[in-house]
Image (spheres, helix red, strand yellow):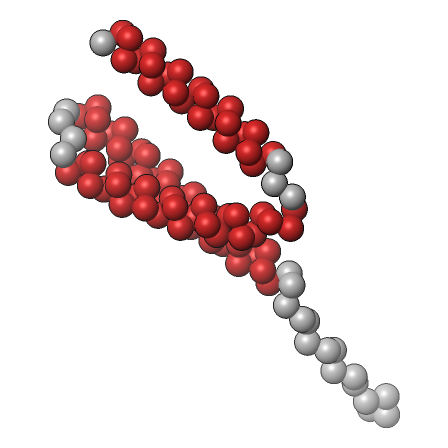
Amino acid sequence: MASTILTNLAILVLAAFVGFQVISKVPNTLHTPLMSGTNAIHGIVLLGGLVAIAHADGFLSRLLLVIAIAFGTINVVGGFLVTDRMLSMFKKKPEPVAEDADR
C-alpha cells in the first residue's frame, strides 16, 4: 500500500515537472491552438471522471472525483472563454462612423 502511494506520488511529481517544461517552451503564437487542443483533451478527461464516479467505492473516492470533475469543468469552460477572447483580438474592428460637422 505504501509503495503504491509513493509510486503514484512520484508519477504526479514527474508529470507536473514534464508538463511545466513542455508548456514553458511553447511560443506565444501557438498558445491559442494549444489551448483549444488541451480543452478538447480535458473534455475527454471529464468524461472519464464521470465514468469513474459510477464505479467508485466509498465516500472519499466519490468526493475526490466530484472535486476533480468540478475543477475540470471550470478548466474547460475557462479555457474556451480565454480562447474566444484571444481569437477576438484578431478580428477587424468596425470603422468608426464619421459624424456630420454641421449639426
